[in-house]
Image (cartoon, rainbow, N blue to C red; front, side, top):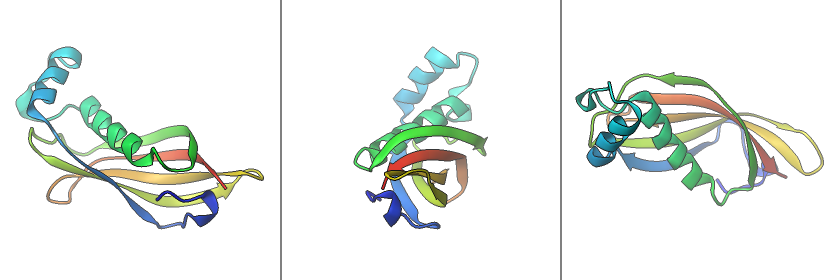
Length: 130
């Protein structure tokens, strides 16, 4: 979606890419940050968030997005197992010009598993250049 605020359309869907739940990364994450979690129960919620954040950061690196104002309404639907391939997408829900050179874009961000089921969802508010 590398587009200025004025070129972004409500309802627009943008791919954030794909990432697998790496078995080694899962074991390392659980050992370091969730020692009571069983890796066979899938990726813990915090790791799912980290996977989404990585996809979002990589996808938006070339966008005219200047600031992330907020991430809220976080929902975890399931804990994907090691090896599961996750697909990220962003859907533009609303936009509001807030000045001569910028505007706020409100988007729903989702992680879907290989079967297309929702794994994680959140709302973001970001500043884009006009």
